[in-house]
Length: 221
Image (cartoon, rainbow, N blue to C red):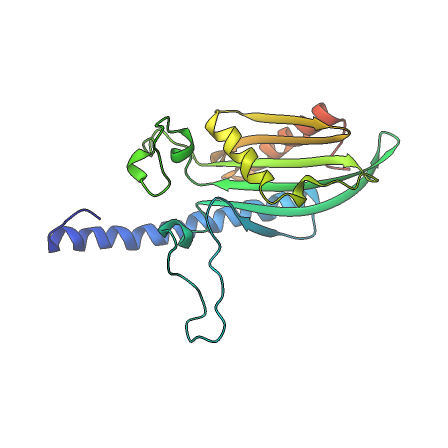
């Protein structure tokens, strides 16, 4: 924080408390959206990964159980950018057995990625575009492949991170990549597209149709 007098600091700390409560409500809603998609598409698990920032690791043999020296302030805020992995499924369509994985990447603020400055840095929030110009989005990332295909792009821990950066830095609404039978689809949505039951149902239906149009696979199968 910039240098403040006591009165300004007291007001700022009120905003900090309000911000944490707002983040709780926001993230609660994001998790509800994940469970909605999970239920509609019949995935059985929900796990996740940090993207771009470090996971806070455990420490053995110490009263303090988490290692927090030499980390960024962003490392404490898991919901800034987070990958929800909904899991793996199999289906038989188009006279063939298929397998697919689905992740949804939560990006609470696109401000860093959309900034054009060559010296931008995650730890310099003044190098981001403004909060008003930035967006809060979800990126649906899907891999579809023949069941007998052993390669899995989810085995590359950097893959989802790289696709996220490619989409956001280049303002892409969707991404389609094909590699010897493996199809990767990424589709970007504004979080507002899911913030009511009616909008969520409509948006997910549109996503299912998008996948079927691009791959021939019906996720409602």
